[in-house]
Image 1 (cartoon, rainbow, N blue to C red):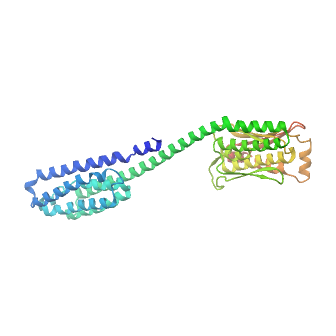
Image 2 (cartoon, rainbow, N blue to C red):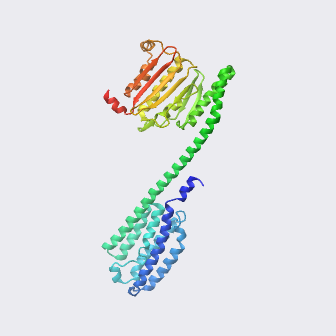
Amino acid sequence: MTKRERVMRMSVEQPLWRALAGYRVLTLLYAIGLFVSAYDDFRRPWIAIAFYAVLAVWTFATLPRVANAAACTKRFLAADLTVAVVGILLTRFADSPERVAAGEPTLPSIWTAGVALAFAIKGGWRWAAVASTPIAVANLIHRGTPARDTVHNVLLVWVASIAIGYVVEVARASERTLARALEIEAATRERERLARDIHDGVLQVLAMVQRRGAVLGGEAADLGRLAGEQEAALRTLVSGGLVPVSRVSEDTADGALVRAVEEPDATDAGPLDLRALLAPYAAARVSLAEPGAPVPLPSPAARELAAAVGAALDNVRRHAGPDARAWILVEDEPDEVVVTVRDDGPGIPEGRLAQAEGEGRLGVALSIRGRLRDLGGSAELISTPGQGTEVELKVPKDTEMARGKR
């Protein structure tokens, strides 16, 4: 038995249907008891006896109809409402005028409330309001005048049935949410199981092929490179499903690995998980190390920081060579998020950045430092010739406050 099946069997509606069936039987017996106790006061008791006979047959014969929502059809509800309204209107012909004027109970008495409750459980508060209206009108016609006790009883049935209908709607929504959560939990567990199997088997084989190919050289090196790229793509896929939709292609013009990712709507003002924006950058020669928990940032800050990381990696590809490796480290500090991009390239000669800015090449100045400055953060570049380059990007979590302090 699956978890979803267990949720459906624990449906909140089933106890309500069982309670409704019991209510209909008990209120039938109550209405008959009231009639028996006041039999001598009725002007035409044979009308009441005929109605109670029909009501008893109808109540017991339709118990299966109030067993669940599927059995409780619209046709049955309409017929049930008709029986209740007819019973109320027949009271003036069966009972004495004095008892009617005194506000004595109608023939079906509180059995009519069960009709409104059936509508409420079946269709929610709107259906309950629809059913309560003709019952209220019939009671007012029976009494002839809107007496206080009649209005009180009418409003009581109306409010109670609508309230129960609303509670049923809320319960159904909660039940659907719970069922969905259990489905997601089951899917997550299955994904984790598959991820473990893939990690223990496929990823290790691909990593071994990559290492052996690099040692053997030639065509084996190309095979190892392809195995490394597939390993990176597969590792991203099983690491937590951070990328919603990803397409990987090889740009043969410059050897760049291109990933087209469907990101969240840019108009979304809510926080974004920075890991989801950085995950597409992971590749055969780019390693991504990130926290196990989400790294939330305001949407503009997360996108700008991810763009700065992309600019840093673009510099690695352009200036460090196609064989250079890069590492991305994400640190979630209490007040800020720190992303470090490091490579093992030849480094940047002293004075080269100033020379590049003088020549109009503003990649580091604008694409990296400019983005971080607009967010109230900072970008620090450390490079030693022959030992690679490290770019440290810092963004405060409260970017609006950081802007105000500048």
